[in-house]
Length: 422
Image (cartoon, rainbow, N blue to C red):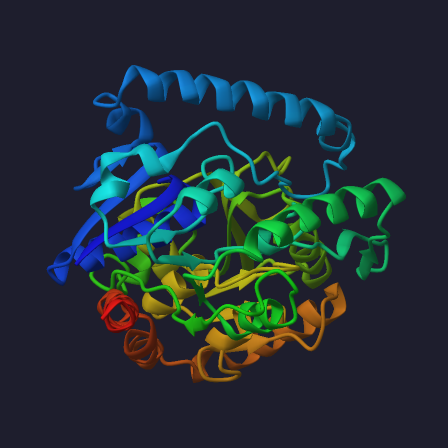
């Protein structure tokens, strides 16, 4: 069985998740290759699209230039919306690309294509028109079935009282989203051999109510975490290495970009200021300057996973105030290190947090609710057992289990196709 995993990059949440799957498949003896648009890490059997194009024909290179030219024309027509899009909102992308992965020798040699986060890499129209192989699409966000947004964000800001400010779509947004959605619907109406992988119950629900993707079969397979890298470390040793105080309770916050509205740091900051305890330290990891405030320590971005395991181990609790999310790797990493988690009841976060067992969910999305929940944790922190938290996480979210579920899915698809051919 030859699997080609396709992802735009080996960075970011989706990049980490598909790398872990790729490694798990290789460890289980599967012939897995990873095709990327951009590559930063030295991972076995990983390739960039440019590397695979070295052996392609001159005709193909001319075709690539032509596709690029035509797509640039398409993008030019729609540039007004992307240029005017609010900076408070996250990424928006069109389903077009100047790459043709079907020309890659890796594609031609594969039995199954496993798409992951492919914005700017897979051109929907040309790919699904030319594709002759079964496709499994792992959905790391909503972009494949929305009108271009990666998350259909409803909350755009926080008000003075610590409650969400809800978004109202503009006429331009409604028009642009419909145009992109109609384009996708026309493509997927003619696609049959597509199987979807949802990471959590929330995403499964979103798919089932969506007119683009609701007719395709869905498998629920959560991400897995390497339990050898993410394991409990000595708390005080971890704090010493990271320069964190040994005599205070530490709240940890992690995001690629701290100021991304969807990640909800504004809610945590306001909650932390209200609590205002000298016995509490907020440790933030990620890109972005916080203009340091009282009892806050910024560690900046950390890309090394072993260092991240130290950060989780150093913390008393990890708080994820995301306003919308899928199945965040950070929650699984924290739990695998035995550190409890507090989160808003959104996306796949309720799938992972068992109230009072490995953390707490807030009652709603608000600063008031977050303050109450943090106080609740501080008053009951001794009730949490790090060893049991890790054991429960290991039983449900380990890398081996994830890869085995994918192997079962791949085999069922190949066996079904084989029977249909006969």
